[in-house]
Image (tube, rainbow, N blue to C red):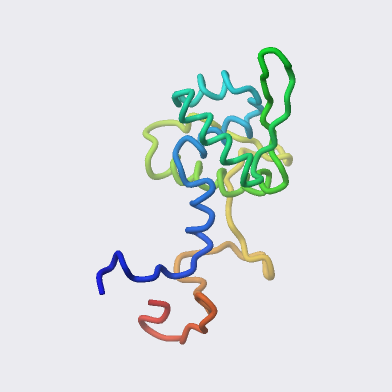
Length: 157
């Protein structure tokens, strides 16, 4: 059986990427997180073509990540705002930005966020139970696609 015909593993990452995994979708979300709500400004700040951006915004609205609110009747114009599902992506985008700052961007980061405590924000993912930061090798899958994952070398496939 070829790799193409094999059934892919059930995966929440793949499910999430089907909604937000395209470049212009993520950049549009970045803009909305920065407070940009109007199509023309999102297009200008991302560099996306109008057709591509319209398609990505429509998908984000259809999938419940953004809400579209009309602010002008003729011609019809809309604001884009984050839904609860969209707001839940902020830690994901901030961690992606931090990764880009550390491993891809040369020089100073192009955008710096400040936490409400007053410090420059350095996002980290922590365990919801103990509060310890996640570290490479510090966690493992225990179930994949409904099947328990055995412990030991090579576990998890």
